[in-house]
Length: 276
Image (cartoon, rainbow, N blue to C red; front, side, top):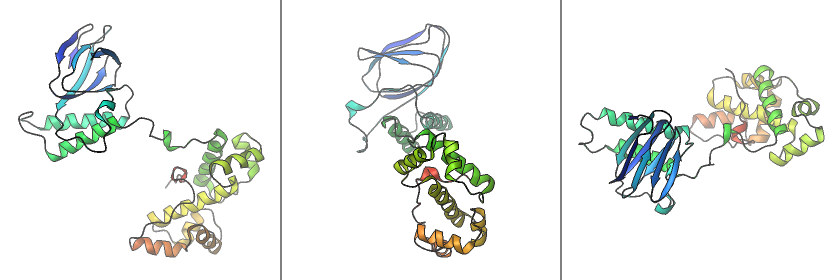
């Protein structure tokens, strides 16, 4: 739907649930005696019985998309009804993508809304609502955890070196320069956040990469060792066994039989980036 500047909708009493996506324009939504600012890209989840008014953007056109639905049974994992949020002004991109997907599925129903939605439609809407109701702040920005800047810089440098030349030996001095702090400060930061020294973290990153290669490539053990910066395959196997509890060949064999891979020594967000 598109509205001209200054137009409005309502007051009206909503007979069912409605999900509204503000595509363009800054909207003011009024219900239950309260007023909400709904800028472009906002998502609203309104309820049956709401007496509501939409004041569309006064400075330009407003466009929005919407769909109505009913809820026959509230999932047990959802929060109490009184705690359901009404609006997400900065929704996660997954939410807006799911909303668009739901609308696209609606368009595929030539006899909509006469025909009831199918199981997949219902499951998709339930997923959308579950994510909408979820408390924000659960996501990890750029898949990075809360670590000091010097640790981020040093780790990213390690990743770049593994990509470019995994055989290069990094010293504590090299990493401290990249981190912009003293060697002592960097060691303290790494041990506090990761439980390992910077140099040991670099070694573990290479071993963590080797585990991924054993899992997701057909490289030989020697080739995996070389790709991860180990000149001596026997030394690589000893290091690998010490960290993961068994040899590289044993891990690969177990994985081919359907076993789960061993636990990584570092957090999952520190998996090395590999340019194939």
